[in-house]
Picture 1 (tube, rainbow over the protein chains, first blue to last red):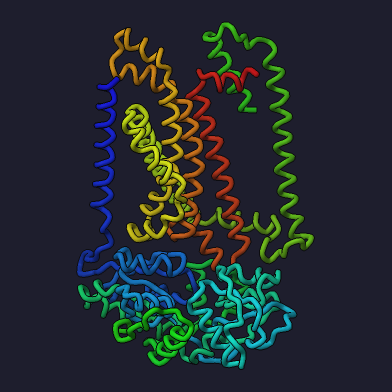
Picture 2: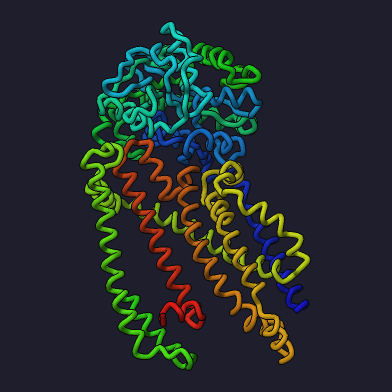
Length: 323
Length: 290
């Protein structure tokens, strides 16, 4: 029996060792350099409307003509994108501005490289809003005092913005109770009265409107009419090691953003390729604005509000974060 | 019906080995009637369930916008089945499932046998295993993303972690179940190490191993879909997530139905493998005869 044991043990140790070895050696993949001077970059994105310019630019060849082969990787929310970029699994990522500010304030080495999506600068016609259900008695943000509002992530851009809307409306933002739920569940939660208001971007916003609900405050507009809601970013290490790739990515993204901004029909078309937004909603979507550059003033305003709400233990350093 | 036939075949195969149990004339009628009744009951259950799903939204118990009637889900399902990307996603999910399960089963058997037969190791690992085992695999998602990003390997990490413990625990019990008398007998007949593993240890542990495989197969599927859903690795889970964020409710439920059917098939398959591998074993024989 003893001899049997020893042999079995030896076999297992061997298998375990080889298994570990193989996974380690291949674990650091995702590096660049392809054939003919083409660099393959992986971009971690969320399957939302905001990243349409990236897909559009890819289709239009804005990246390939600069020697960048774009590989988009769909992740569920920024929670997966930020660690993916920092650990080098993705070379670039897409995240909302507050998440990046929080990361920077914690000294996570993130570096914004391009604008992601911006508020439409039109009050009452933004791509996200504080929504209420059909027949709701609430008509302005202030009335949410003592009520429940749904946000996708607590202590992030949604609750900061809703607080600002309530504040601007003359209410006390500390009296709003926030609950966390995914965007896609908000229309149903509003309908059933589980929450009184919700931070809904498109396409959930279109669903709410289709069900007879409405937006009572343009929360991003209330923070700043030109608010940079999200940005593309990379890691500090990657930016330092590959300034040339970053520069080409920035140029290509700027061109893509500009193109998307002036071709809304093509944006709606490209949406059908990477999302499943139903045709009935597609035409009613309010698209964000896609200026080429992040708006620094608006990000400073968002930072101030974040500090006020206690999102950061230390204020983020915008000079380190922004391009 | 098919089931009944295979049972019958095995009945005959095993006949020679069991002289005392006499699966004679009493078994066919008793086995057949419940099978027909079972099939009818099963069909009635499914029809009832489907009707309930349809009714719940048709009569406005829940809003049809958020829980669409079955007919709309079926519609979306047909569209899905015609989409090449759907089949790619299905393949991705099955790859993650199969690879993860294979790794977990192999590692579970090897580790389980070694730990179970070395008393020292068993003592040393008992508390560690009990500590690691209840950690939910999904809690490791941040680690998986950090190590492997949103790729197959992060799915594998979660799948293997979840199904490995199912295997390991079963194997531990299985190996401990070896009859010392049988082991000593084999030894005194001069059976070598591998012969004893083959003829004493393995047959004793096999029923446990098969139970482990069946449990692990189901857990592996759940974790494969969950990982894709949460991390965004390619597969059915990712498609569900995209449908969710796109407010494409019927499509989402259509994909959910697909994962359910997949789970059903995997369970049926695992049971078939189990019966075949344990055709000689009392538990399976018992199922046929009684």
